[in-house]
Image (cartoon, one colour):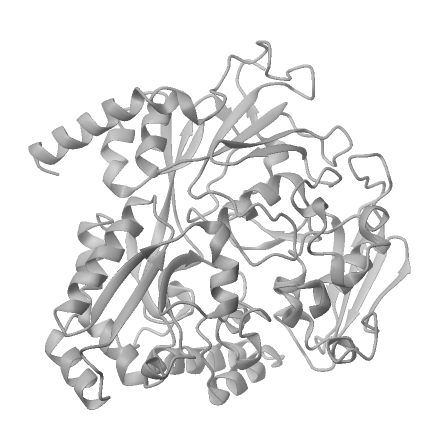
Length: 541
């Protein structure tokens, strides 16, 4: 970083320091009035949210990084992914997969409770899984249950509940599938569990719109939801009925831009924030902050709406990849704190011989010409602004696509608009990130499979390749682990060739953590849910 850049950044930080007081409650001294320190171990922690939450919490809404991070404080699931991307029991005491991967049995921990004191039992899991599996509930994850016995009957409107999901006793849940499905554990295990005694009597078609999902006051996580003040904060407080009990009294999660977050770390207003690599030098100058660094399990990409005729030809999508100097983007925008992504699969597990789509504008122009691209066609690129790397990526993509004859119009949107935009297919390209493709390679199917087109799954690209689906299903049903890995490698090569997504990079998660906060473990990139927040504490409490 040159002297002028450092001066400009420092001036920007100084200016931001003067205005951060408008972003909500600041960090207070543990035990001071307002911290709620009479609860649990005491103390208040303030955490950065990289985007404004959409504000529909729980397991039915489309995946959203900031909403998911709030969810990870107030809800719990049977299983969760730890910072090493390994599944660990949360509400479950144990789980078992039959040798043929067609029967999944979960045993709940004893004496679980909702925060209102009501026992949490297998009936709650049964209710939740049936709700999430039912398209009438407007569930964005219904397709995850497509292989479960009886799920098709529910989807077709011939049954109210999924016959393959049972609760033989208050501590046991059994899920049976029609085919071997090794990836099912990683897909349904992390689903957030809902309270049957609160929501069970609501007609399934009215469930999603219930006020509960905007103000989920009865949950089982280590913290209880208090309020969400738009553009200011989400406030949660300790749940005394949680297992285990939290050590903190309360947490504020604050949406703000990344430059404001950097300043707030410096003045102590924030305890935790993901930071841009461009701000790393500034952050490292804060004595009270240390940075945790970890490669994320997901990646930043541009989804390309292939329901539009001009994106159906894979040569157009390949051309876009050749047109953008992604290696330079990683080096200059992310200062090397990322790796270029070339398939939908977790980079450390992907084949090494994939086409790297090295920067080649001439080849991009030729591919566009061969595909009959109309140079008069204008396309929009939408994204949620506020993160420096993504803001820069959007303008770089626009500029470099223009050099090969593609006219791009930038379109900023807000998180609350995303679900409707996806549902209406009202976009050309959308820049977004996230996903966890390290926990299970089968998770890739959620964004690629023909039957996972939004809203049935995360395939917002409306991409479909039957051969890829066939290999993914074969891999997920293969008992032999070596053979399974070989099949996933074949699938990665198809993904790479078809350019189903406009991949950019897999970022390093750079988490700045105030020294006063103990127990926080970087979960990877900025979109990933928090791990074990019950163990967090602050010094002096």
